[in-house]
Image (cartoon, rainbow, N blue to C red; front, side, top):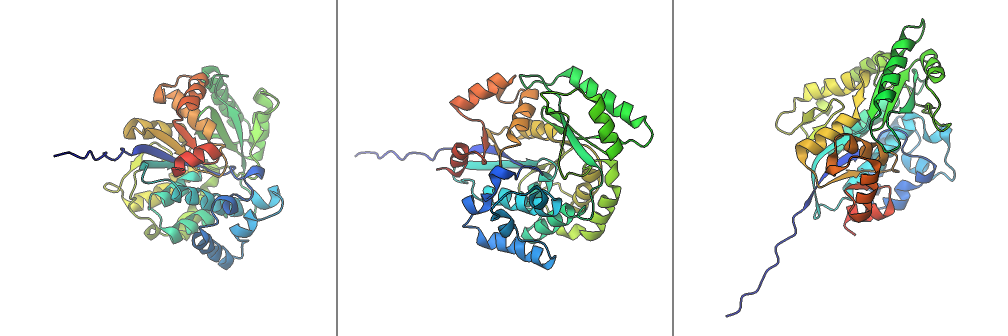
Length: 356
């Protein structure tokens, strides 16, 4: 009697999924929805029905524009919904036969997207929260943001740059009429938020690097700072706690806190999302570290559009020696052999994420 050998199924790879924030839908991403997600018409139409009711241009038409326009594509009321649609659509394309999604997180506005990925916001709730918060400064920006490196050439945190940034923040805030705060800890970068006087003063105090930094972030308000008190209050008034649900996938927020399907208090989730998350620094670096330490993923996957978040994720991993990486050299060598960091904004890695 012969025994037939049945091949056991290959175990799924565990992945931490990361949602991007503002500033990732740029010239090269124009047409992203049509290029990759023409099959998601119902999802996109649902978003555009909501936007039609609010007399806003459809994301389908924004994505289909012949030319990329800073004036049209970067304001929060358009960029937020467009980025959410791209990211959520990418999430739908992840091959669930090959990958087990063990947790989700996001950078800045990516926290709202993470809520949607995890089911803490349903489809209608997600576009309501994302569009409402993204439209809060449609009548005029409150403050602004700039970004500055906090790392050396090998993507390791540089304590001298950290001290410089902290000193500049303190010095600027000691000057009359100036306000400056840490907004986001972004891997090897620090994002600062402030009023116009504070940002201008910081630009004079921070040494120029590569004729590029300090870099102002176009059409960005003073996110994650006390300057957005009014935005937080308006958000709480406009968005009911009933929109929020217990997640079906664990979520890691901008303080490194884990929200699970077992422990989440939806009122506290509402309060954090529209309160502390709006007003206090967003520690994206810590969120990545917690995700890797607590959930031990085999890979980290960054959703599109684009791949502006790939570098900061790698830098955050290097900072905590994730996957054994201690420098940019370790990261690039590892990526050539067997990628541990997948970005759906890159064609080859996108195919890996989709199981193609």
